[in-house]
Length: 113
Image 1 (cartoon, rainbow, N blue to C red):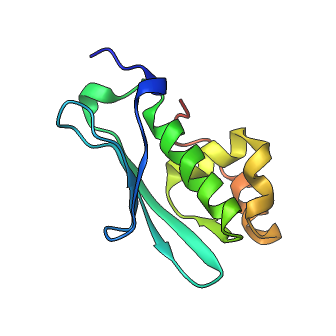
Image 2: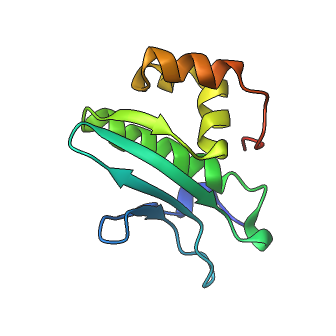
């Protein structure tokens, strides 16, 4: 399946507590729990036919940019988001010092796109 990342919008579905896309009836998602001063990124899921196309990375960037714009402290629970933040230092200021130590010390798990 051919996917052009520039043509795909990430939708913030606040009611469902997730960032999502719709591609040919398939829905990549990144779920979260929001608190007054923070946001926990819980799970990222990309349907198998869409894996390896950069969709999870686009979801993570959008979610982390949302956290920054809303001054929310990020708690990355999702292994994909942890790995993404490890590889993209421009987002590491969004986590607490303790969480940053945890992120940087964990072995690489998920593969960032």
